[in-house]
Length: 122
Image (cartoon, rainbow, N blue to C red):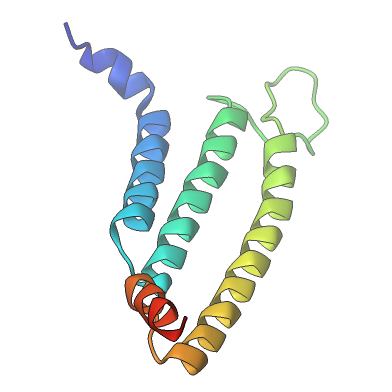
């Protein structure tokens, strides 16, 4: 039987999985390159949120306080996510630059149309 209490305890994990699958579906179902890049960014955001959720401790505080009687939130996932965000922005900028060049050359950003044009050129 489906247990709603366990789902409530894992709501953050469930939401990151749903967000990731939404981005994955967008990448698979659309032939527009801009929409594929948006889907990729949604997937990346889901992964970032997943790592932040893993590092969260209920009732924890920031580790910069220096007290021994409290629980601390793990700062490593947050630090790694900062690097991941920088890489994600760079990949997105590069992908958009490639899309601009493809549009200038083929006049469209539709993958199927570009493939049809390439087949006709050969």
